[in-house]
Structure formats: C-alpha cells, structure tokens
Amino acid sequence: MSEELDRRQFLKGSAMLAGLAIAPGMLLYDLAHGRSLNEPASSAVRWGMLIDTSQCESGCDDCVKACNKENGLPGGTRPTDEQWIRKVELKDMRTGKATSLPMMCQHCEEPPCVDVCPTGASFRRADGIVLVDRHLCIGCRYCMMACPYKARSFVHEPLHDQKPDVPRGKGTVESCTLCVQRIDRGENNTACAEACSKAGHKAILFGNLNDPDSEISKRIRTVASTQIRADLGLNPGLHYEGL
Amino acid sequence: MDALLKNRRDSRNFYLLVALGLLIVAAGLAAAHYMEEYGHIVTGMNNQVVWGMPHVFAIFMIVSASGVLNVASIGSVFGQAPYKARAPLAGLLSIALLAGGLTVLMLDLGRPERVIVAATQFNLKSVFAWNVFLYSGLFAFVGIYLWTLMEKRMNSWSKPAGLLVFAWRIILTTGTGMIFAFLVARQAYGTALLPPMFIVMSFAWGLAVFLIVQAAMYGWNEMQLHPAILKRLKNLLGLFVISVIYLVTAYHMTNLYFARQSAFEHFILVDGGIYPMLFWGGYLFVGSLIPLFLIYFPGMGGSRHVLAASILVILGSFSLLYVFIVGGQAFPLSIFPGYEVTSSFGDGQIAHYAPSLPEILLGCGGLGVAFLITAIGVRALNFLPRDAAD
Image 1 (cartoon, chains in turn cyan, brown):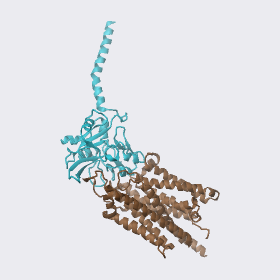
Image 2 (cartoon, chains in turn yellow, red):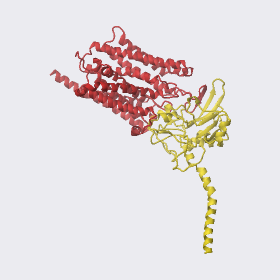
Image 3 (cartoon, one colour):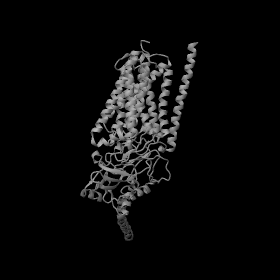
Image 4 (tube, chains in turn brown, yellow):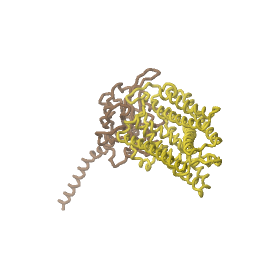
C-alpha cells in the first residue's frame, strides 16, 4: 500500500518537475513565435519603421541588396524592373542640404492602393502590413496610379528562381511586404533593417508601434520625426527622422 | 436588274468590310496574346507610366459609348423627333463602343485570364469595381431601350427606358472621371472637375462618332441628310466642342493658379515635348479650332465639312487623352515637395514612354470590335435613321 503511494507520489513529483523545466521554454517559444500560422495577425501589433536619415549614408545600398536577396528580386534598375526598396538622394532646394534615405511601401493606415483595388487583392493586414494577394491581383495597375509614394512595381517579365516563401507572379503588382515571411516565422526584423545595422549605420529601426515599451515607440516619443506626405492624412507606418 | 446588281454589290462590299474588321480584331488579339506571353515588357509601359496607349483607346471608346447616347436622350427624354429617329443607331453604337473599350481594357490586364476574378470579387470601396456594375448595367439598359424602340408593342415604354439610360450613362461617365478624380497624390488628376469634364467630352466625342457612322450609312444607301437636320446636328457638335474647350481651360487655369502645380502645367503646356505639341496642335488646333471653323464659318457646314469636323474631333480626343493619361503619369510624383530628388527608380525624373506596336494593335483591335458590331448590326436590323420628310 505505502509502496503504491510512494510510486504515485514519485510520478506526481516528476511530472511537476518536468512541467517546471519545460514551462519557461514553452513561454519563450511562445514569445519568440508570437503566433502560430493558423492564428490571424493581430491588430494589437502595428509594425512600422523609424528611419534616421542622419545615419543613412549616401551611396550605401546595403538595404536594397539585402531586400533583393531576401525576396529573390533580380535587382535590375530599368524602368520596368521591380524595386521594392530604393535609395533616394534629396537636396533641399532652399538650403542645399543633402539627405539620403531608403524609400519603400509606407504601409499606410489608410492605404489608397487598398481603396482603389477592384478585387480586394491589395489589402492591409490587421498588424498594419499592406500586401497584395497574388491570386486575386488581375494586374490592372490602378494601385500604382493611386500610391503617392511610387512604392509599387509591376512584374513585366516571366519570373525564374522564385523563393518558396516569397511567391511572385508575372502580370501582378508587388511591393515591400516588411519581410512578412520573417515576421510570420517570428523573426521580428526586416532584411533591410538587419543589413543596415550590420553595416554599422543603424538607420532603420523596425518594431511594433502599438507597444509603448518597444524601442521604436520610445524613440518616436523622444525624437522629432515625420511621415512622408503627412498632409495626405494616410498615417503611414514608416516614420523618418532628420527630414 | 439595277436593284439586283446593287444588292449584289452591297453584299460583296459588306462581306469585304466584315473581313477587314475581322482582320483588325485578329491583329488586336494576336497583340494581346503576345503581351500575355512575354509580359508587359513588350509594351512601352513601365513602373512610372503604368497606363499607356491601350488606355487611350479604351477610355476614348468608353467615354464615347456614353456620349453617343446623347442623340437618343434628346429624342426619347426631350421628345425631339429628328433625334428619336436616330435613337436606335445611337443605342447600337453605344453597345459597340463599350464592348470595344472593355475588350481593350480587359486584354491589357497583367492577368487577363483572371477576368473572372474581376467579375466575382468586388472591393466595394473601389471606383473600378463600381465601374464593372456601371458597364454591365449600360449593356443591359441600352439593350432594353433598343427593344422598346424596335418592337412596336413596346414603343410606349421607350420614354421611361430612355430616361433610365440617360441617367445611367451620366452616372457611368461620372464613374469614368472619378477613376482619375480619386487619385489623391497625382498632380494631373485628383480634382472634382474631372467627372463633369468627362461628361462634356463624352457629348462631343460620342456625337462625332455618330455623325461619321451616319454619314457612312447615308453614303452607302445613296441618301442625303435633310439640311435642317444636318444643321441641328452640326450646331450641337460645335456647342459640345466649345464646352470641352471651356472645361479643359478651367482645369488648366486652376492648376496654373496653384504654385505647387505650376511645374506640372509648365511641363504639359510648354516644355514637355510631345505633350504640349499634342495639346496645342493635336487637341486645340486640329481637334477643336479647325472643326469649329468647318462647322460655323460662312460657306462651311455642308455634310462633307461636318464629316471632316467629326473626324478631326476624334483625332483631337486621342491627343487630349494621350496628354491627360500618359503626360499626367510621365511627370514625376511630388513625394518630397521642395527637394530635388534622384533615385534608381526614376524619382524626380520625367518618365519616358513610347507606345509599342502591340499596344497600338490592341487598341485598334478594340475599334475593330466596335466596327464589326456596328456593321453587322446595321446590316441585320433596321438602324438607318429615317426622317419623316424621307
């Protein structure tokens, strides 16, 4: 009888111990992955970027190369080639001040591309990422007419060697996805931001604008930043510092 | 014997015309297939000029499809007999032009095989999606209207049907104008002036198409248009051409007054190369002033003059649409006002666009579709306008 009790207690004890040992791991796993693939994106998160133009080096295009590599883009620069991110060189016409910055889809809260899309192929995910559903896009290019940032490209030629996690299609429109494949894997950083940090510039800060404790939220609270064409009232997810 | 000979000759000429139409449509389809096979790289369009020559053709046809119904509306809604006699032909032309325009728009899509997606998945906030309903509605309502006109038992319904068509086509062209008016960030577009401007353009262009087709039909049947009716129609065309000049002027004047728009206006009207040339030479001189001269100048205004004026109005419409659509996109977006901008993606630069042969063939193919529907419709059914005096 007592032997049986001992065994029972032993089993109970080991189960608890095992539970204690695994729990932090499970918790960490949960934190790292955010959500499973079956779970929809949540509006508790709004992904965005803060770009510090004073740290962005003129002539450096590490972010562009990293984006091309991550998303399997050929990297051509003809007017018909796809460019999800580009380096823009600016010169203030009044003061002559030169600025360099990366330009891409601004992931607006009120995206004109989503409004005008006839089939609903252009859509905004709950977590603020603006995407194109490659199965619904009919290639009418109305979103490209509507985008105030010239952020979108049309695939003008047949595609080869696509990356399996970045589906693309000839005759459809595409643009920066904020590396959605990475976000959905739980790697909460984009290829461009990572490359910029690696190059030592740290000009691109990616993060959750809805989390008051995230680094990006703290920075936006403390430094002067602006949104491009803020006058249009689209509330982009990308903020620029030093512009 | 003479009648028999004429009948034979007519038949032969008709089949020749149909063969010609089929040839043009086939060339358009071949061009579309080529574009689909190789991608839009074989067109002149790019990531800056995303709408090109096919859209110039398509929008011309869609706008004219609505405007040509003016002739019918004046008859059915406002009860003018000479126009009533022309209502069936106007209805047929409307259906033909709309079909031609939509064929071009559809075949220019990056994924034309997904047209079924466009017909089943709707984003109700999109003015493009609204247009899908407006187009299919116009086909249906003009079809019903034609039925009430051509079936004696239904004649009493022609007035309400005409009223419905009248309202619908005004809404339809408003929708076409809104496609551009809703573009918030483009200097050339994004103004509430565009829907009324498109409506007035539709009046002029639709009537010009009507007059050309009517002249061809009268010529074919060796008939003369009654001078009084010719005078009314030509005066109406002149009035519409003047109205278009008025709205186009108001549009450019508004832009010129806004300092932030002056660089764009300077580009379109002065130093933009092909665009100012087409605006002043193609639209204003050839497409408006010469037609007005042919219509109103003493000694002018005969049937040949009016026919020439109509053809020139259509040439002018293509010029104006090219400037509006292509020129409006070629000018760079103002993303960073106050800055000089350069990038690998054409920021701050005037975009280059040269229409390629497949694009032009596709556009002509759409005109071919409209021509075939008209030719076969006119041959098979009684669309010839007959006035009481005849």
